[in-house]
Image 1 (tube, rainbow, N blue to C red):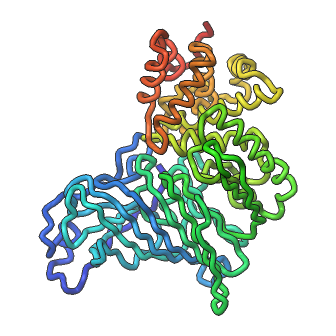
Image 2: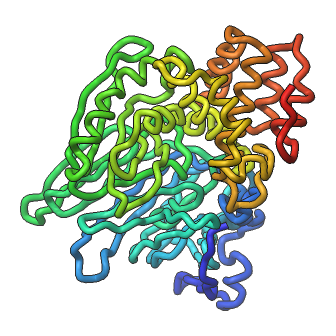
Image 3: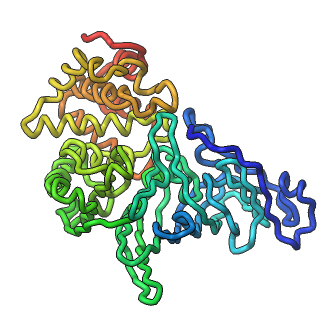
Length: 480
Protein backbone atom coordinates (compact mmCIF):
# COMPACT_ATOMS: atom_id res chain seq x y z
CA UNK A 1 0.00 0.00 0.00
CA UNK A 2 1.24 3.51 -0.74
CA UNK A 3 2.73 5.23 2.26
CA UNK A 4 0.82 8.15 3.78
CA UNK A 5 1.78 10.55 6.54
CA UNK A 6 -0.52 10.14 9.55
CA UNK A 7 -2.87 13.07 9.90
CA UNK A 8 -4.53 14.04 13.14
CA UNK A 9 -8.28 13.95 12.43
CA UNK A 10 -9.92 17.37 12.18
CA UNK A 11 -13.60 18.21 12.26
CA UNK A 12 -15.69 20.84 10.56
CA UNK A 13 -19.22 21.60 11.80
CA UNK A 14 -21.88 24.17 11.01
CA UNK A 15 -22.17 26.76 13.79
CA UNK A 16 -25.89 26.08 14.06
CA UNK A 17 -25.31 22.48 15.06
CA UNK A 18 -25.55 22.40 18.84
CA UNK A 19 -23.44 19.42 19.73
CA UNK A 20 -20.05 18.96 21.28
CA UNK A 21 -16.96 18.76 19.09
CA UNK A 22 -16.03 15.36 20.44
CA UNK A 23 -19.48 13.99 19.76
CA UNK A 24 -19.30 15.33 16.23
CA UNK A 25 -16.14 13.37 15.58
CA UNK A 26 -17.80 10.14 16.63
CA UNK A 27 -21.47 10.42 15.69
CA UNK A 28 -23.76 12.30 13.38
CA UNK A 29 -26.00 14.76 15.10
CA UNK A 30 -28.88 17.10 14.50
CA UNK A 31 -30.16 15.28 11.42
CA UNK A 32 -31.93 12.21 12.75
CA UNK A 33 -29.36 9.89 11.23
CA UNK A 34 -29.87 6.21 12.11
CA UNK A 35 -27.88 4.40 9.39
CA UNK A 36 -24.36 3.04 9.68
CA UNK A 37 -21.05 4.32 8.30
CA UNK A 38 -20.06 3.08 4.88
CA UNK A 39 -16.61 1.96 5.97
CA UNK A 40 -13.11 2.80 4.80
CA UNK A 41 -11.55 0.51 2.22
CA UNK A 42 -12.97 -2.53 0.45
CA UNK A 43 -10.35 -4.83 1.98
CA UNK A 44 -8.40 -5.35 -1.21
CA UNK A 45 -5.74 -8.02 -0.49
CA UNK A 46 -2.90 -5.63 -1.45
CA UNK A 47 -4.37 -2.17 -0.86
CA UNK A 48 -6.92 -2.69 1.94
CA UNK A 49 -7.63 1.03 2.43
CA UNK A 50 -8.32 1.64 -1.27
CA UNK A 51 -11.95 2.30 -2.17
CA UNK A 52 -14.82 2.61 0.29
CA UNK A 53 -17.91 0.70 1.31
CA UNK A 54 -21.58 1.66 1.32
CA UNK A 55 -22.02 3.26 -2.09
CA UNK A 56 -21.34 2.97 -5.81
CA UNK A 57 -20.18 5.98 -7.84
CA UNK A 58 -21.93 6.55 -11.17
CA UNK A 59 -20.39 9.84 -12.30
CA UNK A 60 -17.58 12.28 -11.50
CA UNK A 61 -17.72 15.94 -12.49
CA UNK A 62 -14.35 17.57 -11.86
CA UNK A 63 -13.76 21.31 -12.30
CA UNK A 64 -10.03 22.01 -11.87
CA UNK A 65 -7.64 24.92 -12.34
CA UNK A 66 -3.83 24.70 -12.45
CA UNK A 67 -1.04 27.14 -13.18
CA UNK A 68 2.50 25.67 -13.30
CA UNK A 69 3.99 29.17 -13.01
CA UNK A 70 1.90 30.30 -10.05
CA UNK A 71 3.94 31.73 -7.16
CA UNK A 72 2.05 29.58 -4.63
CA UNK A 73 3.90 26.37 -5.53
CA UNK A 74 1.84 25.06 -8.46
CA UNK A 75 -1.48 25.14 -6.69
CA UNK A 76 -4.38 23.03 -7.92
CA UNK A 77 -7.90 24.15 -7.08
CA UNK A 78 -10.84 21.88 -7.63
CA UNK A 79 -14.50 21.19 -7.15
CA UNK A 80 -15.55 17.55 -7.41
CA UNK A 81 -19.21 16.60 -7.67
CA UNK A 82 -19.63 12.86 -7.20
CA UNK A 83 -22.93 11.19 -8.04
CA UNK A 84 -23.39 7.88 -6.25
CA UNK A 85 -25.98 5.34 -5.15
CA UNK A 86 -26.17 4.17 -1.54
CA UNK A 87 -25.82 0.41 -1.11
CA UNK A 88 -27.25 0.60 2.42
CA UNK A 89 -28.62 3.15 4.88
CA UNK A 90 -25.70 5.51 5.47
CA UNK A 91 -24.98 7.80 8.40
CA UNK A 92 -21.50 8.55 6.99
CA UNK A 93 -19.26 7.53 4.13
CA UNK A 94 -15.62 7.87 3.13
CA UNK A 95 -13.88 9.29 0.09
CA UNK A 96 -10.22 8.64 -0.72
CA UNK A 97 -8.20 11.87 -0.91
CA UNK A 98 -4.48 12.06 -0.22
CA UNK A 99 -3.20 15.49 0.81
CA UNK A 100 -4.96 18.63 -0.47
CA UNK A 101 -6.89 21.07 1.74
CA UNK A 102 -10.63 20.52 1.94
CA UNK A 103 -12.58 23.78 2.11
CA UNK A 104 -16.19 22.64 2.03
CA UNK A 105 -18.27 19.49 1.64
CA UNK A 106 -21.98 19.30 0.85
CA UNK A 107 -24.38 16.43 0.26
CA UNK A 108 -27.48 17.07 -1.83
CA UNK A 109 -26.83 20.82 -1.57
CA UNK A 110 -26.60 20.91 2.23
CA UNK A 111 -23.33 21.50 4.02
CA UNK A 112 -22.03 18.32 5.57
CA UNK A 113 -19.71 17.67 8.48
CA UNK A 114 -16.41 16.07 7.57
CA UNK A 115 -13.10 14.94 9.05
CA UNK A 116 -9.72 13.75 7.78
CA UNK A 117 -7.87 10.61 8.78
CA UNK A 118 -4.91 9.87 6.54
CA UNK A 119 -6.21 9.28 3.02
CA UNK A 120 -9.80 9.10 4.30
CA UNK A 121 -12.18 12.04 3.94
CA UNK A 122 -15.06 11.05 6.22
CA UNK A 123 -18.35 12.75 5.27
CA UNK A 124 -21.35 12.95 7.61
CA UNK A 125 -24.46 14.15 5.75
CA UNK A 126 -27.09 16.17 7.59
CA UNK A 127 -29.75 13.60 6.79
CA UNK A 128 -29.52 9.84 6.49
CA UNK A 129 -28.98 8.43 3.02
CA UNK A 130 -31.39 5.57 2.38
CA UNK A 131 -30.39 2.34 0.69
CA UNK A 132 -30.94 2.71 -3.06
CA UNK A 133 -30.91 6.51 -2.92
CA UNK A 134 -28.94 8.40 -5.53
CA UNK A 135 -27.10 11.36 -4.03
CA UNK A 136 -24.53 14.00 -4.98
CA UNK A 137 -21.59 15.00 -2.79
CA UNK A 138 -19.61 18.11 -3.65
CA UNK A 139 -16.08 18.70 -2.36
CA UNK A 140 -14.19 21.97 -2.75
CA UNK A 141 -10.46 21.56 -2.26
CA UNK A 142 -7.08 23.03 -3.15
CA UNK A 143 -3.37 22.68 -2.54
CA UNK A 144 -0.20 21.28 -4.05
CA UNK A 145 -1.01 17.74 -5.22
CA UNK A 146 1.34 15.01 -4.08
CA UNK A 147 3.45 12.49 -5.92
CA UNK A 148 2.66 9.03 -4.57
CA UNK A 149 5.41 6.42 -4.21
CA UNK A 150 4.17 2.85 -4.59
CA UNK A 151 5.47 -0.18 -2.69
CA UNK A 152 7.52 -1.11 -5.78
CA UNK A 153 9.18 2.33 -5.81
CA UNK A 154 7.39 3.71 -8.88
CA UNK A 155 5.84 7.17 -8.75
CA UNK A 156 2.32 8.20 -9.70
CA UNK A 157 -0.30 10.70 -8.62
CA UNK A 158 0.54 14.27 -9.62
CA UNK A 159 3.85 14.42 -11.49
CA UNK A 160 4.87 18.06 -12.00
CA UNK A 161 6.83 19.04 -15.13
CA UNK A 162 8.53 22.27 -16.18
CA UNK A 163 5.53 23.37 -18.23
CA UNK A 164 2.65 21.52 -16.57
CA UNK A 165 1.94 18.14 -15.04
CA UNK A 166 1.12 14.53 -15.75
CA UNK A 167 -1.48 12.86 -13.51
CA UNK A 168 -1.41 9.03 -13.44
CA UNK A 169 -3.21 6.68 -11.10
CA UNK A 170 -2.20 3.03 -11.09
CA UNK A 171 -2.83 1.66 -8.55
CA UNK A 172 -3.97 4.42 -6.13
CA UNK A 173 -2.42 7.68 -7.33
CA UNK A 174 -5.61 9.31 -8.59
CA UNK A 175 -6.58 10.13 -5.00
CA UNK A 176 -3.77 12.72 -5.08
CA UNK A 177 -5.77 14.98 -7.43
CA UNK A 178 -9.45 14.22 -6.86
CA UNK A 179 -11.58 12.66 -4.11
CA UNK A 180 -13.37 9.45 -4.98
CA UNK A 181 -13.85 5.75 -4.56
CA UNK A 182 -10.38 4.75 -5.70
CA UNK A 183 -10.62 1.02 -6.28
CA UNK A 184 -10.98 -0.75 -9.66
CA UNK A 185 -14.23 -2.40 -8.56
CA UNK A 186 -16.09 0.94 -8.79
CA UNK A 187 -16.24 2.40 -12.31
CA UNK A 188 -18.03 5.56 -13.42
CA UNK A 189 -18.42 8.07 -16.23
CA UNK A 190 -16.58 11.41 -16.10
CA UNK A 191 -16.70 15.08 -17.02
CA UNK A 192 -13.31 16.69 -16.43
CA UNK A 193 -12.82 20.42 -16.98
CA UNK A 194 -9.38 21.95 -16.47
CA UNK A 195 -8.49 25.65 -16.71
CA UNK A 196 -4.85 26.50 -17.48
CA UNK A 197 -2.89 29.52 -18.74
CA UNK A 198 -3.53 30.29 -22.38
CA UNK A 199 -1.11 28.42 -24.64
CA UNK A 200 -1.01 25.20 -22.63
CA UNK A 201 -2.86 22.06 -23.70
CA UNK A 202 -4.89 19.73 -21.48
CA UNK A 203 -5.47 16.13 -22.56
CA UNK A 204 -7.63 13.68 -20.65
CA UNK A 205 -9.78 10.61 -21.26
CA UNK A 206 -12.74 10.36 -23.58
CA UNK A 207 -13.57 13.11 -26.05
CA UNK A 208 -12.98 16.85 -25.98
CA UNK A 209 -16.49 18.23 -25.45
CA UNK A 210 -15.58 21.91 -25.34
CA UNK A 211 -12.67 24.33 -25.32
CA UNK A 212 -13.03 28.00 -24.45
CA UNK A 213 -10.63 30.87 -23.80
CA UNK A 214 -11.28 33.87 -21.58
CA UNK A 215 -9.48 36.79 -23.20
CA UNK A 216 -9.45 39.03 -20.15
CA UNK A 217 -8.01 36.36 -17.85
CA UNK A 218 -5.89 34.69 -20.55
CA UNK A 219 -7.05 31.29 -19.41
CA UNK A 220 -8.25 28.30 -21.47
CA UNK A 221 -10.69 25.69 -20.20
CA UNK A 222 -10.70 22.17 -21.68
CA UNK A 223 -13.74 20.00 -21.01
CA UNK A 224 -13.25 16.24 -21.53
CA UNK A 225 -16.11 13.76 -21.33
CA UNK A 226 -15.88 9.99 -20.77
CA UNK A 227 -19.24 8.31 -21.30
CA UNK A 228 -18.13 4.70 -20.83
CA UNK A 229 -17.40 3.38 -17.32
CA UNK A 230 -13.83 4.03 -16.19
CA UNK A 231 -11.89 2.96 -13.12
CA UNK A 232 -10.15 5.81 -11.32
CA UNK A 233 -6.70 4.26 -11.79
CA UNK A 234 -6.87 4.75 -15.57
CA UNK A 235 -8.04 8.38 -15.34
CA UNK A 236 -5.39 10.74 -16.70
CA UNK A 237 -4.44 14.38 -17.15
CA UNK A 238 -1.60 15.69 -19.31
CA UNK A 239 -0.97 19.44 -19.03
CA UNK A 240 1.73 21.19 -21.03
CA UNK A 241 3.10 21.94 -24.47
CA UNK A 242 1.85 19.19 -26.77
CA UNK A 243 1.57 18.75 -30.54
CA UNK A 244 -2.07 17.68 -31.02
CA UNK A 245 -3.41 15.71 -33.97
CA UNK A 246 -6.99 14.60 -34.58
CA UNK A 247 -7.74 11.89 -37.14
CA UNK A 248 -10.17 8.98 -37.49
CA UNK A 249 -10.01 5.27 -38.20
CA UNK A 250 -12.77 2.91 -39.36
CA UNK A 251 -14.89 1.61 -36.50
CA UNK A 252 -15.94 -2.03 -36.14
CA UNK A 253 -19.64 -1.06 -36.22
CA UNK A 254 -19.22 1.28 -39.18
CA UNK A 255 -18.55 4.99 -39.10
CA UNK A 256 -15.31 6.56 -37.97
CA UNK A 257 -13.55 6.25 -34.62
CA UNK A 258 -11.82 9.46 -33.46
CA UNK A 259 -8.06 9.22 -32.85
CA UNK A 260 -6.56 11.90 -30.62
CA UNK A 261 -2.78 11.95 -30.14
CA UNK A 262 -0.70 14.39 -28.11
CA UNK A 263 3.09 14.41 -28.37
CA UNK A 264 5.61 16.55 -26.54
CA UNK A 265 7.60 18.47 -29.19
CA UNK A 266 10.96 16.91 -28.30
CA UNK A 267 9.56 13.46 -29.13
CA UNK A 268 7.56 14.39 -32.22
CA UNK A 269 9.67 12.83 -34.98
CA UNK A 270 10.27 9.35 -33.52
CA UNK A 271 6.84 9.17 -31.86
CA UNK A 272 4.84 10.01 -34.97
CA UNK A 273 6.43 7.14 -36.92
CA UNK A 274 5.00 4.70 -34.37
CA UNK A 275 1.68 6.45 -33.72
CA UNK A 276 0.97 6.47 -37.45
CA UNK A 277 0.48 2.71 -37.07
CA UNK A 278 -2.53 3.11 -34.75
CA UNK A 279 -5.05 2.45 -37.58
CA UNK A 280 -3.22 -0.76 -38.52
CA UNK A 281 -2.97 -1.90 -34.89
CA UNK A 282 -6.62 -1.11 -34.17
CA UNK A 283 -7.78 -3.12 -37.21
CA UNK A 284 -5.62 -6.06 -36.10
CA UNK A 285 -6.81 -5.83 -32.50
CA UNK A 286 -10.50 -5.74 -33.41
CA UNK A 287 -10.02 -8.79 -35.63
CA UNK A 288 -8.44 -10.70 -32.75
CA UNK A 289 -10.21 -9.32 -29.66
CA UNK A 290 -13.58 -8.17 -30.99
CA UNK A 291 -15.15 -4.70 -31.29
CA UNK A 292 -13.27 -1.85 -29.67
CA UNK A 293 -15.09 -1.03 -26.40
CA UNK A 294 -14.69 2.78 -26.36
CA UNK A 295 -15.72 5.79 -28.44
CA UNK A 296 -12.22 7.13 -29.21
CA UNK A 297 -8.60 6.07 -29.15
CA UNK A 298 -5.14 7.61 -29.37
CA UNK A 299 -2.03 8.13 -27.25
CA UNK A 300 -0.09 10.67 -25.21
CA UNK A 301 3.69 10.79 -25.54
CA UNK A 302 5.23 12.70 -22.65
CA UNK A 303 8.85 12.76 -21.52
CA UNK A 304 10.82 10.69 -19.04
CA UNK A 305 10.96 13.83 -16.92
CA UNK A 306 7.31 13.20 -16.13
CA UNK A 307 7.29 9.41 -15.86
CA UNK A 308 9.55 6.51 -16.73
CA UNK A 309 6.82 3.95 -17.52
CA UNK A 310 3.92 3.52 -19.93
CA UNK A 311 0.38 3.24 -18.61
CA UNK A 312 -2.86 2.05 -20.22
CA UNK A 313 -4.92 5.13 -19.37
CA UNK A 314 -8.39 4.80 -20.88
CA UNK A 315 -8.89 5.82 -24.52
CA UNK A 316 -5.30 6.99 -24.91
CA UNK A 317 -2.36 5.37 -23.11
CA UNK A 318 0.58 7.45 -21.90
CA UNK A 319 4.20 6.79 -22.91
CA UNK A 320 7.49 8.21 -21.58
CA UNK A 321 8.97 9.12 -24.95
CA UNK A 322 8.42 7.44 -28.31
CA UNK A 323 7.16 3.86 -27.78
CA UNK A 324 8.09 0.78 -29.73
CA UNK A 325 5.37 -0.76 -31.88
CA UNK A 326 5.13 -3.70 -29.47
CA UNK A 327 4.65 -1.39 -26.49
CA UNK A 328 1.92 0.49 -28.36
CA UNK A 329 0.23 -2.85 -29.10
CA UNK A 330 0.49 -3.79 -25.41
CA UNK A 331 -1.13 -0.61 -24.11
CA UNK A 332 -3.86 -0.55 -26.76
CA UNK A 333 -4.70 -4.19 -25.97
CA UNK A 334 -5.32 -3.06 -22.40
CA UNK A 335 -8.32 -1.10 -23.64
CA UNK A 336 -10.06 -4.48 -23.93
CA UNK A 337 -8.24 -6.23 -21.09
CA UNK A 338 -7.99 -4.05 -18.00
CA UNK A 339 -9.94 -0.95 -19.02
CA UNK A 340 -13.15 -2.51 -20.34
CA UNK A 341 -12.83 -5.83 -18.50
CA UNK A 342 -11.46 -4.51 -15.21
CA UNK A 343 -10.19 -6.63 -12.30
CA UNK A 344 -12.33 -6.93 -9.19
CA UNK A 345 -9.22 -6.59 -7.03
CA UNK A 346 -5.49 -6.03 -7.48
CA UNK A 347 -4.95 -9.77 -6.98
CA UNK A 348 -6.41 -10.17 -10.49
CA UNK A 349 -3.79 -7.94 -12.14
CA UNK A 350 -2.58 -10.84 -14.30
CA UNK A 351 -5.83 -10.68 -16.27
CA UNK A 352 -4.71 -7.22 -17.41
CA UNK A 353 -1.04 -7.81 -18.02
CA UNK A 354 -1.15 -11.41 -19.21
CA UNK A 355 -3.53 -10.56 -22.06
CA UNK A 356 -1.62 -7.39 -23.01
CA UNK A 357 1.70 -9.25 -23.02
CA UNK A 358 0.25 -12.10 -25.07
CA UNK A 359 -1.09 -9.50 -27.51
CA UNK A 360 2.56 -8.52 -28.14
CA UNK A 361 3.37 -12.17 -28.89
CA UNK A 362 0.43 -12.46 -31.29
CA UNK A 363 1.40 -9.23 -33.05
CA UNK A 364 4.94 -10.50 -33.56
CA UNK A 365 3.61 -13.83 -34.82
CA UNK A 366 1.33 -12.11 -37.34
CA UNK A 367 3.95 -9.63 -38.51
CA UNK A 368 6.98 -11.73 -39.39
CA UNK A 369 8.48 -12.09 -35.92
CA UNK A 370 8.80 -15.07 -33.60
CA UNK A 371 5.78 -17.27 -33.20
CA UNK A 372 4.06 -17.30 -29.82
CA UNK A 373 5.42 -20.82 -29.35
CA UNK A 374 8.97 -19.63 -29.98
CA UNK A 375 8.52 -16.82 -27.47
CA UNK A 376 7.11 -19.29 -24.96
CA UNK A 377 10.03 -21.70 -25.48
CA UNK A 378 12.60 -18.93 -25.10
CA UNK A 379 11.06 -17.84 -21.81
CA UNK A 380 10.75 -21.36 -20.50
CA UNK A 381 14.35 -22.24 -21.37
CA UNK A 382 16.07 -18.94 -20.63
CA UNK A 383 13.48 -16.64 -19.02
CA UNK A 384 15.23 -16.60 -15.68
CA UNK A 385 18.23 -14.95 -17.35
CA UNK A 386 16.28 -11.81 -18.25
CA UNK A 387 13.42 -12.15 -15.77
CA UNK A 388 15.04 -13.50 -12.64
CA UNK A 389 11.75 -13.49 -10.76
CA UNK A 390 9.77 -15.29 -13.49
CA UNK A 391 9.07 -18.33 -11.29
CA UNK A 392 9.14 -16.57 -7.93
CA UNK A 393 5.35 -16.66 -7.41
CA UNK A 394 2.25 -17.73 -9.35
CA UNK A 395 0.41 -15.13 -11.49
CA UNK A 396 -2.79 -15.36 -9.45
CA UNK A 397 -1.05 -14.83 -6.11
CA UNK A 398 1.58 -12.04 -6.11
CA UNK A 399 3.79 -12.08 -3.05
CA UNK A 400 2.89 -8.54 -1.95
CA UNK A 401 1.71 -5.14 -3.18
CA UNK A 402 5.27 -4.49 -4.33
CA UNK A 403 5.05 -7.46 -6.73
CA UNK A 404 1.82 -6.89 -8.66
CA UNK A 405 3.80 -5.61 -11.66
CA UNK A 406 6.54 -8.25 -11.58
CA UNK A 407 7.37 -10.71 -14.34
CA UNK A 408 5.03 -13.56 -13.26
CA UNK A 409 2.06 -11.19 -13.70
CA UNK A 410 3.20 -10.40 -17.25
CA UNK A 411 5.30 -13.12 -18.89
CA UNK A 412 4.21 -16.16 -16.89
CA UNK A 413 0.57 -15.09 -17.26
CA UNK A 414 1.07 -14.82 -21.03
CA UNK A 415 2.61 -18.30 -20.97
CA UNK A 416 -0.55 -19.54 -19.26
CA UNK A 417 -2.70 -18.04 -22.02
CA UNK A 418 -0.52 -19.76 -24.61
CA UNK A 419 -0.96 -23.05 -22.78
CA UNK A 420 -4.73 -22.53 -22.95
CA UNK A 421 -4.44 -21.87 -26.68
CA UNK A 422 -2.44 -25.06 -27.20
CA UNK A 423 -4.97 -27.03 -25.13
CA UNK A 424 -8.14 -25.89 -26.91
CA UNK A 425 -6.89 -24.99 -30.41
CA UNK A 426 -6.97 -21.65 -32.18
CA UNK A 427 -10.68 -21.56 -33.05
CA UNK A 428 -11.84 -22.14 -29.48
CA UNK A 429 -9.09 -19.94 -28.06
CA UNK A 430 -10.17 -16.89 -30.06
CA UNK A 431 -13.78 -17.64 -29.21
CA UNK A 432 -12.72 -17.52 -25.54
CA UNK A 433 -10.74 -14.29 -25.95
CA UNK A 434 -13.47 -12.45 -27.87
CA UNK A 435 -16.28 -13.88 -25.75
CA UNK A 436 -14.52 -12.93 -22.51
CA UNK A 437 -14.11 -9.33 -23.73
CA UNK A 438 -17.72 -9.15 -24.94
CA UNK A 439 -19.44 -10.84 -22.00
CA UNK A 440 -17.60 -8.70 -19.41
CA UNK A 441 -17.55 -5.48 -21.43
CA UNK A 442 -17.40 -2.42 -19.11
CA UNK A 443 -17.58 -4.70 -16.07
CA UNK A 444 -15.34 -6.34 -13.50
CA UNK A 445 -14.05 -9.88 -13.29
CA UNK A 446 -11.65 -11.97 -11.24
CA UNK A 447 -9.52 -15.07 -11.67
CA UNK A 448 -12.32 -17.44 -10.69
CA UNK A 449 -14.60 -15.84 -13.29
CA UNK A 450 -11.98 -16.44 -15.96
CA UNK A 451 -11.21 -20.06 -15.14
CA UNK A 452 -14.93 -20.85 -15.01
CA UNK A 453 -15.41 -19.13 -18.38
CA UNK A 454 -12.62 -21.13 -20.02
CA UNK A 455 -13.99 -24.40 -18.63
CA UNK A 456 -17.48 -23.51 -19.87
CA UNK A 457 -16.25 -22.79 -23.41
CA UNK A 458 -14.15 -25.98 -23.58
CA UNK A 459 -16.13 -28.51 -21.53
CA UNK A 460 -14.34 -31.48 -23.07
CA UNK A 461 -10.94 -30.38 -21.72
CA UNK A 462 -9.50 -30.90 -18.25
CA UNK A 463 -7.76 -27.73 -17.02
CA UNK A 464 -7.03 -28.95 -13.48
CA UNK A 465 -3.30 -29.40 -13.97
CA UNK A 466 -3.03 -26.17 -15.94
CA UNK A 467 -4.55 -24.11 -13.13
CA UNK A 468 -2.59 -25.93 -10.44
CA UNK A 469 0.80 -25.65 -12.18
CA UNK A 470 0.69 -22.42 -14.18
CA UNK A 471 -1.87 -20.21 -12.44
CA UNK A 472 -1.53 -21.09 -8.75
CA UNK A 473 1.55 -23.27 -8.49
CA UNK A 474 4.88 -22.32 -6.96
CA UNK A 475 8.11 -22.65 -8.90
CA UNK A 476 8.76 -23.55 -12.51
CA UNK A 477 6.18 -25.98 -13.91
CA UNK A 478 7.39 -29.10 -15.62
CA UNK A 479 7.17 -29.04 -19.38
CA UNK A 480 4.80 -31.81 -20.57
